Length: 203
Image (cartoon, rainbow, N blue to C red):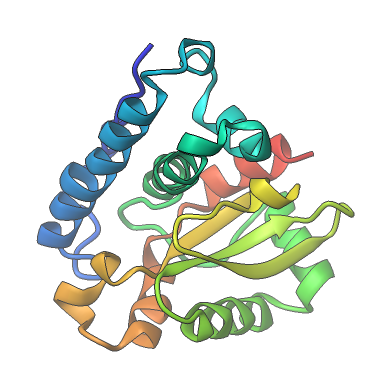
């Protein structure tokens, strides 16, 4: 089965004014679509890999054949990362989390504000393109970390609960070089319900 770009769960303009419609259109229809096309192309010569989910490919990246490993890492990672990204945002999102994620954030970081500050600082300091994540690490603890390019924390045995895209294509049309402003605004579209589901799945 060829990998496919999942449809956006809302309209392109639904996250205005925090993420503009033009950025969403380009990000989903062009950038994500390119990752999926390149992933499918890379897998053509290895039929035994074509039935694996993108997550399975990324978790087992070290066993992917050498000649396509970089292509699968970059494009499979881009597919997995963005498929999560669209879901963990929603119109009229944001606010304070409820449920288990609220309890675990307080336990791990002291307060939502302290967590958001750490998350934003980590995203701002990620050099070049990449992502900032909240993960359940291989030791079972919540941790904030960043990864370069389209690397996914699953490559290192962590489970990504939520992540924000800090590639320039995610924010440059609206925020230009002000990545910190984008990171601060992004909390207004966070979908805590979906993040709670991911938290439970990560158990």
